Image (cartoon, rainbow, N blue to C red; front, top):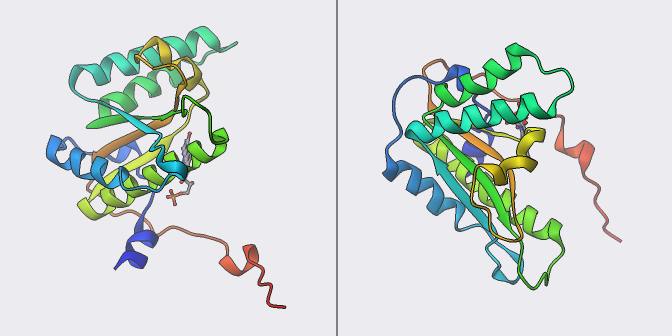
Length: 185
Ligand SMILES: Cc1cc2nc3c(=O)[nH]c(=O)nc-3n(C[C@H](O)[C@H](O)[C@H](O)COP(=O)(O)O)c2cc1C
């Protein structure tokens, strides 16, 4: 049931992942779900870079190096954590947004469409029993040093993915009624 699935979706972090690999077929299943997101003027601005195998380790090393270079007082523990996260994940998907070349829409609409694609992917992961979470570290602005980004393409973060064993606690939200007003007359 979609409403249960939505409520069951949680952020599951790399430290919670086990060693079970994720098959390419499963990754493609969630990418296909992502691709059904809506977009204004059907720009379909979501772009994904699926990083796996040794490239995952290279990505971790790249991010750790960028963190150290661009942080006033980098902490060893943080550098290690960045590399650990890459190692612990089965797959890392870079979440990118390709701006419409004619800029017919405001940027926010293309970011919003990309976020909707990520939600589809995230819910798809729940359905498949795969843990994931969207990470948006400040170093994403340097990702053109790792990925071959097109003109107008920007990285909005990473979806870290892996299977997990321990049950995940139920999420919590403040009541929806606190965030909603009805206007009837
Ligand atoms: C756009 C976006 C960026 C996020 N970036 C981070 C992040 O950098 N680090 C992190 O720990 N969680 C990040 N999250 C996950 C949120 O922390 C998480 O969704 C929130 O705490 C609610 O928990 P839940 O996903 O388990 O419901 C991000 C989520 C979104 C939607």
